[in-house]
Image (cartoon, rainbow, N blue to C red; front, top):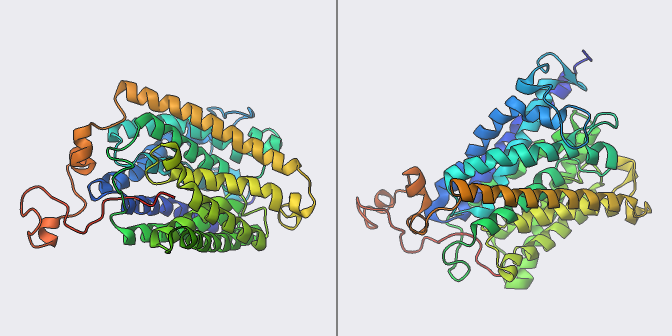
Length: 437
């Protein structure tokens, strides 16, 4: 067994915990953006991913993602984490590496849930998540994250595209799947004519803050060691996120005449998404450029759903798909040999790396969209994926979970419904971003 480094192991255990924290952070971020009657369901969809994916990962997910010599999919040699308890992965116990990668597998399907907020059956979501991580995420993780001396995944080990922490495997993957699911489930009742604003902006900002905090484990942890590369990824994550948050609200100011708290939170997430694939390939100045590009382009991209008529409830396409594409492709322009050993186009490196980045992004986008669309149709045609119109009007929290996120009867001294059915008080907003960009 190779020598285990205690410092690397400690950092990776901490990073794993940070990445897990991102999923509750995402739950709050999404939960604040939906209507009062959907907040618990939105949070529940993320927490369900923690349970489902953790079990599947141990049963066969890790084996399919990180074993074998096939460029497309792993094998079953590590089913039940067989053989990993006393083995090493570099300077880490293999079980620690597996735990770190598990947290990536958990948050990726949770990202998809924002595209279908307010209208997905919880049982349908559970089935879709189970199928999706098995047929889409585990193979794509094998493509992107599995290095095995030239015998690993075809994107990571053979094509030579750079994706340090999951711009393709996580964000483009989830964004494409979100678009497919939104198309299968159709529009929410009343969208886009009725305003659908966030019901709890402080919850959105709390979620964005937890995501930002956890993302240091996501990106810097992907160095898989406590070393200088982790430090570069850490700094790049911070400055890109800051630049994107500012770029988003500046774009809002020019477009709408005001800067919003929803905008600064969304801009921060867009920056985190875009720097994810690039944080181990660019300098801090390159990271700032990526952040600015993501903040502007994602702020504009959230309006695509109004132009093309697909109801992506919480802008999974505009932020994760577009942000993932921005970060993945800009590596081909901004990669620095001082960081990654290869120069991008703007540093005299030619078009080769940009071409590799485009192939990787296009392959993941196409595979995820097509397979996700088929899986969503299968769920819809079998057990049903969309709730009934009556359930949507009454609220998915009460119909699916027999609970409500807020007790207005006690909060407002019985002025709004008393002991009877909970009703929305005057002045409480409906849900989601309403500006048609």
